[in-house]
Length: 274
Image 1 (cartoon, rainbow, N blue to C red):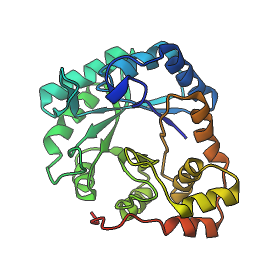
Image 2 (spheres, helix red, strand yellow; image 1 turned 45 degrees about the vertical axis):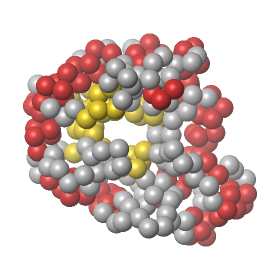
Image 3 (cartoon, rainbow, N blue to C red; image 1 turned 180 degrees about the vertical axis):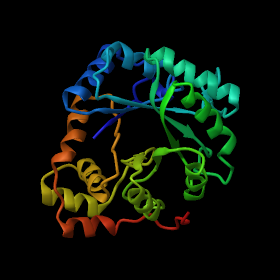
């Protein structure tokens, strides 16, 4: 279990948090619960999530991995804008370094595609910029976000890719075969929107399994992800201390093969396989 910081800034991932002290306390509790993986991006806020991480957790524990993303910027109106130019990626890496207060970034995920999922564009130019920064010692590891299997295969011929971060949950299953391929290669898979994102997971079958195991539906959905494949890292985000503890308790749930089969039958209709 890890933690995603996208919900820490204000509404629409813009501006300061409603309650800064609470945000700092949640980040500290993440480590107290045993997590060593935090997912962030300097365009959350912008700059807000990273600055909160630094204030709450620096100096960082030696085993803490902070994964960040580049490839987007925020307009003055709060809009999300693609920027994968060499200049933009250089600027993004240096802003992450400054706001996290580190000399090198543990993991940088190159965010590709658009708001509705991966595209078919080549990754070579953008990835080349990150490889250059890695050679300079500013990036330790490179990952990909919002990518197709074809883009991953192109990227792995150009760099050592340690993780992929895509949308995946009980009802959004287009990456099923991709996850298995990555697992065979020892590449981590980090599902974003693990609880359904802007459309929260709702299913009678999910509720039924939750009742059987004596847990909440969200906890069961997270437990299913953790059991789905050994390379999956969960980064459910929240601003609530109670919800954070509930999320982390999902790691203690063991689902039977029957329960897993029931949950596996929950599949979003009319999804085009990638």
